[in-house]
Length: 357
Image (cartoon, rainbow, N blue to C red):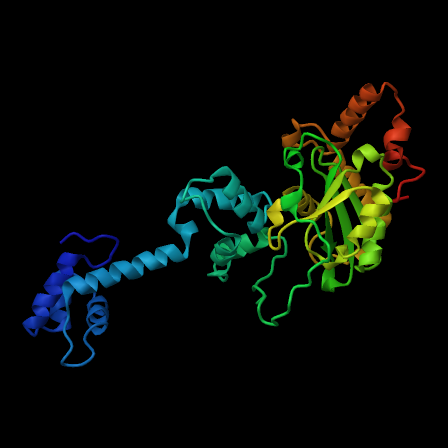
């Protein structure tokens, strides 16, 4: 009798039902079907627990199929190879599950197979975390946690920042990356939540600014952002998109000091600031998870920043962020009919005024 994937077929279950009615033993049934006795015993014991119970082949087969389908649905990545390849390749590039889910949503809007949440990706990785493949996948995650933290354990209410402007109200042209001057910002937290650095990434050119901060208080963080942004000419100060971190509670002061418009992404939607998230992943190559940023010198931060800004990017046509910024300066100079490099972007490049000296 033909067997499929070692699962009992409907025909085999009909034989089981017939032989049970003939009061045949489990060993006899197993021998007739060429199956292990344990498999037959398990199948029968699922349905017959007392003498009055009956075994129905059609019902048993339907139930087995439902169980199998449910198991398949529990891990969509293992079910669909195309989805699995996309997720694994993205993880190898250092992309977070949140960003992977967001990229899939944009690239495959009408494909039911290519549709998955970041939570499902995490569940796939951690479901069998002791396996060799899971250990390798965990190492590809930004934080390398062996176990996932239970976010609902403490039932804390999320603090909402007052007077925030949602990314939904951000002008559509910013999404197109056709105009320079629009930034994404974030904090990178050090070991023990006791140190941090701040990062800014310009959306069009991918130009990156890295700042050291002494603490995570809102006034401290926004002051550092203001100082760095005000080192730029106003043509490079148009907007900033941030997450819902409480360090941005002082955002109205920052907007007044810099003249930029500040927008906030939706909670747990890091893909809405994908440029910044990807850049933070690159910065982690210099300062891995577990780094104490209090022990990192300003020179080390400057070296990392310069490395990123002098690194060719495929998305930029293999040009560097510095080269793209210079192109924007040339365009601006042509538009206003004057060439004054130091006046336009001096403080970002000047050795005299740079924050990392």
